[in-house]
Length: 149
Length: 138
Image 1 (cartoon, each protein chain N blue to C red):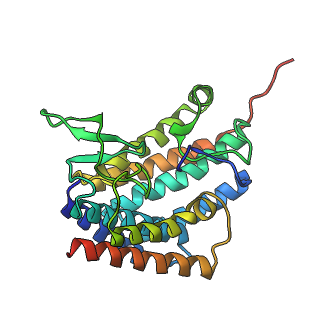
Image 2 (cartoon, chains in turn green, red; image 1 turned 60 degrees about the vertical axis):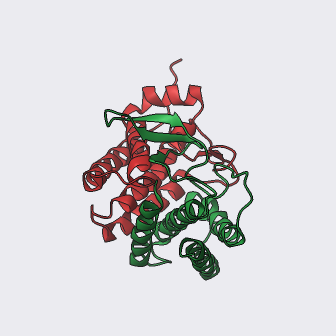
Image 3 (cartoon, one colour; image 1 turned 90 degrees about the vertical axis):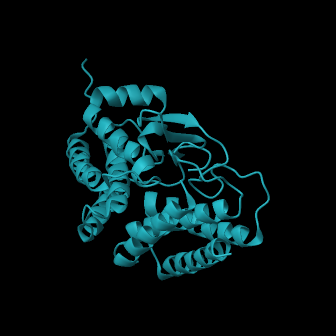
């Protein structure tokens, strides 16, 4: 996607995140955190020229994207160096600016809780919520510092 | 997700999957179809728990070997599911297919897709609850 579209997605996910109670609605609160973080990181990556703006949408398979053909119909293609779907997926070979590396580290903290707490039944504790909240704030601040220049 | 689609380090019983799906569906009550990204993701997440519930009930997968996404099934498992729970599998695939354009992308029409995903989740829940093991004839 384009940088502006990622920023708009981030705003939507961030607003949705705020609608959920971190404890009672942990699964969706967490998932909006994850999606918002990924959206703002994609915007930062494009802004820094690490990845390219591109009119394609990421599928769940790395490097396979939905693209629009000349007739407006969408089809799948391999595309490289554009949107990521998770930190490290697809892997970025270029070196990262410090602020983006910091955002990546923060997202990795959030991602650690995904399988245990969302796919599995690891207890959702105040510590987990605090760790995710703190990492999210760090991720967003770091990514915005790149986007805002 | 990195490195594969099987989640094998915990034991999620059908009852635990149902409890997780119920929690997610309860949180969905805070959403309208204009919140389409969240609806699509919520139906994917709740649907995944119902999907694993069904796989365990059908004795297709063990409690320690959940499948993260339907498309990560191996070939034989997928063929067997397409025979035994075809609508459930199609519904999961359809929800997953919307994620590129409406969650990771910015296509128009998200509200209609959200409404569709809510219906698909009802299909998934219905078929998961009806799922059971095959009986062997002597």
